Amino acid sequence: MIGEKEILRLAGEIYSEFSINYLIDVKIEVLALDKFLKLAEKIDYVKTIIDGKKIKSLKDSPISILTINGEPYRIVFCKNTVNKISRRLSKQKQKDFIKAITLHELYHILNYESKRELVYNYLFSDKNTLENMKEDWKDFYKILEDNKKKIRL
Image: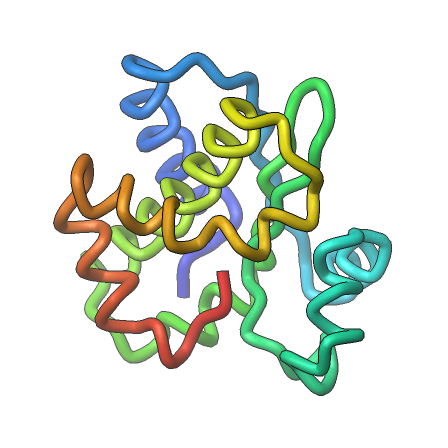
């Protein structure tokens, strides 16, 4: 199991690397399941996913990370869900998984910033996000592709 401090360290490392090429102001947080769910219920794109019946219940969903617009943007991890999804991976793959999902969210922010689209377009920007990752971070892209049945980013 990866703890809160380790998630913050790993996400911070990849954010620092990402920030060499892209300047995005981001705050990274880790929450326990109950606080994460309360926050997720308030987010428009999560409401759209639920209303569109893409997931039955937020509590049972594989959503492990949220991106919240603001100054700065916030990337919020659910420690419980991240560990549940990655529990069968080796310790190194778990660490790489944290970095991969962080990169995924950073590209969502970058795509949003460059186009200034509505928040709902986060739902439709996965293709662009994954293409960006595939070009720039092949190893982390592969981790997401290998585990895409388990996760909803």
